[in-house]
Structures are given as structure tokens and as C-alpha cells.
Length: 232
Ligand code: BTN
Image (cartoon, rainbow, N blue to C red; front, side, top):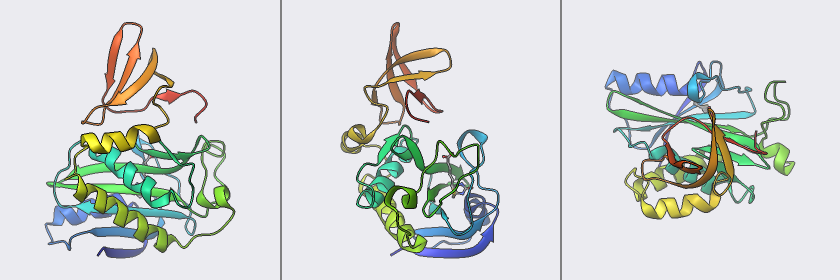
């Protein structure tokens, strides 16, 4: 059973969840912080995350121990599982963006603090208009299916699937999890580029790194982002 901490408005559910972990207050297992409105959402690589009050689902799962780096790929698998009945064409863009029709539906930001891990998940649920900067790169469940969704129902399904998959694999990107991840990953067997390099993405390691075959050998990209042609 999940324990939902509901907030009307917060700067960032990840910041709130990290403060809870720092306070040392005992936490009920499977706790999720959910905010109806998030005003300063944080994205990966120091970026910000755009959300609109009624349309974006902003949530942070609290894991009371430190997780290994591969956990973020495991989380992407859990989110994919939760949403694939709604959108059968969902894919994962390494490491953990959930995409559909080459546009981003969901972003995941994993942070650690005080011996615990916070997994922030932002899903564009009922959004119909994005700001100019991301309008051609983002999509929502509503735009993909033409109907509205109850954010709290989606939250329950996503939190349950993510906690389940973390438990099932003990928080590690096991070989079995990698086998599930690879067919869903939009980067695999595609040309990717990062910094001044290009190559063909072949697989991921148990630490969650992307392996890319280049002209000079195999490069291991541990974190960050790679560009995939045709995807935002
Ligand atoms: C990304 O794609 O860059 C990651 C975006 C993560 C956004 C979510 S929304 C809930 C949680 N709180 C935050 O401040 N960020 C994450």
C-alpha cells in the first residue's frame, strides 16, 4: 500500500522529499510526495521542469536507502509498465525519458540525500499547450489519446509499478531488467551523438551506462544525454 503525502502547492516535490529524509523523521514505507501545483520543478542536468497546475502530475517517491545508479533505468521500466495500456506505443529514451511519437511524455529525476533516494517523476497528463520552447518536443496523455485522466489514478498506478519493480530487482538493474529495457529503448541500434562523437548505441550496462560503438572502439556513456536523430 502506498502512503501519499498530498500538498496543495510546493516549489519542488523532490526538494520537499529530500527535506523529509534529512529531518530523520521515520517514514512509512512506500511514501510518495504529491503536489497539485509545483512552482519550481527541477529537471535533469540543472534544467527546470515545466508544469501546469491541473495538468501535470508531479510526484516524488521516497526510498529510505541509497540506490545504485542503474535504478533510474529501472524506474523508467516501472513508469512504462504503468502507462503502456493507455499508450501502447511508449518508448524509453536513455536513460529514463518516457517518449511517444518521438516526443517527451515523462521525465525522471533521481536524487540522493542523507542515506536515502528520491525519485521525482513528472508526467504530462492533461496538458494541451506547452510553452514555445518545448512545444515541438513535448506531448501529453491527453494529446496522445484525446481524453482526460484523473491524475491521482495515474499516480497510484505509476507509484505501485515503480515500487514493485524496485522491490522485485532489489533496486538493481539486473540482467533480467536489462532484457526488458532494451526492446523498449529508442536509442538501441540507432545512431546517437554526444559532444563531438557519434556511434551506434548497442546496449546498457548494469550500472545504467549506454554503450556506443564508434569508429575507434566502444564508448561507455555513464550519464548525461545523447541526441538520437528524429527524436527531440
Ligand atoms: C527531466 O526530464 O529533466 C526530469 C524531470 C523531473 C520532473 C519531476 S516533477 C516531480 C519532481 N519534482 C521536481 O522538481 N522534479 C521532478
